[in-house]
Image (tube, rainbow, N blue to C red; front, side, top):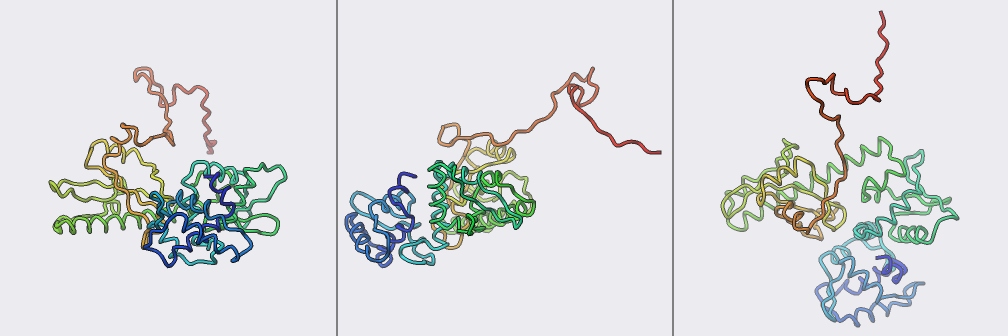
Length: 350
């Protein structure tokens, strides 16, 4: 991805390229035609067009689809053009947040952004700030430039400040090195809770529509959001399989990017193991954009089967720790095998 970014030099070139399709949304254009039309805007600003590089980047971000010599606007590309625009040479705030979310799907981009976050500090106003340093290597300086171009970093006079609207698009572990206040933590958790609830309501509506459209309104009327009254059930939505009226257990996962990635609890994993093919993961990409969403919901049946087949990779992200079991006949208590354990008790007053 960074090779594509280096070739395009400025993320605003995406705007120049996508503008070619502004009045040709349903057109299939030749690759050479797209490049020539974008290049013809050379006098529109101070940057010289780099349409070939921008075309490769737009394809990598799924804004454009290329089949052979023909180029078409994707569903995600239409959403990009529907967002309020600033100019044909620079990303608007909404376009910048979309491009940032798409870039964060790339592992190298996430690693580079994580490196930048390690240099950031949260000020007294709870604002994340970044002060340039002469010892920064080329990779960090380059990453900062791209963060500026998409709007995540803004000039604050003595350095840079992170736009708050981008913080919600960052995984929590990337923010941790810069510090996270209690207030900011609760704000993030509340935003995540609202986003998860909205994603579940969306999936519920989609399931009702799916069953109604295949001629099963009787089942559609029985779909319910279980998490509303039982968050420990191991799934969020109770729906049905139309073939035999058997239950379909749906766990809703979401992300601010488009890459399929999620964490699940022990209860969810156990429910998936018990249910087999009746257990589904419904993954909602770009969950910050639910109205007129640019990407469809990904429906994944029997996720454990996909993990066993190697289609999905499961990694531990947390661990439970407890004392070792002891022989009941000699056990002097639950902490008997921890001689180094220090216990403090308040003094007894009389």
